Image 1: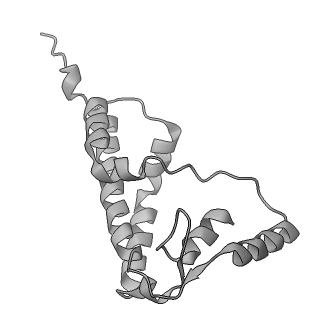
Image 2: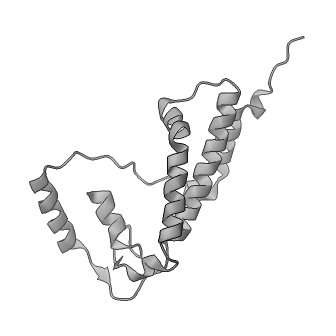
Length: 148
């Protein structure tokens, strides 16, 4: 007797359905991937100075966005990890990046635990926040990390 798996219930279809239905993923789906050329030391210094000059810092302390965003990202990573493990258990082929994620997931979890343990609640309120631009309201360090 040959058993066929219902294609509508395959791990890959479930992954797509979960990702398509997730409000958080849709909210951030228009974010561009982090890709840019590598800077030399001198270019990095010049770029950092240019960033500092163009940033407008909000004089009013911002919201605590760091730990809530970390929790949202953790939930998504856990879902993706679970779905990838299901795909592997079902002998589906997965992309090399997915293999990397499965192999290194324990390191990601370790970093999340460390951030939760060492960053006090309200920590990001103490950081300078952007006044304008796509990251308005977010800590200035987000833009610096993205740009550098």
